[in-house]
Amino acid sequence: MGYLILGIIILAAILVLGGYIVLSVMNAAMWMDDSMRWGGRDDS
Figure (tube, rainbow, N blue to C red):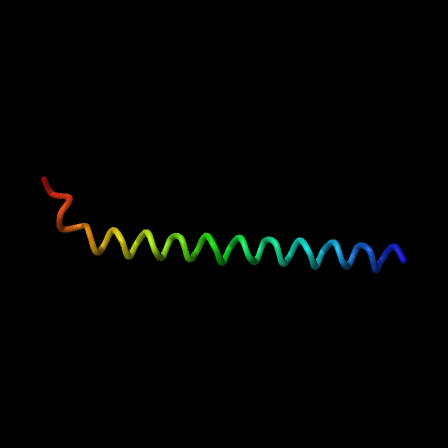
């Protein structure tokens, strides 16, 4: 029984970490896209 609970906790932790990594990568990609799109205007 203890192993089942431990396995569920580990799976939940992997899912949370995976989702966080995906979101952070998406945010980084959006930020890079914005910096490329607006990069030419920042030279004042």
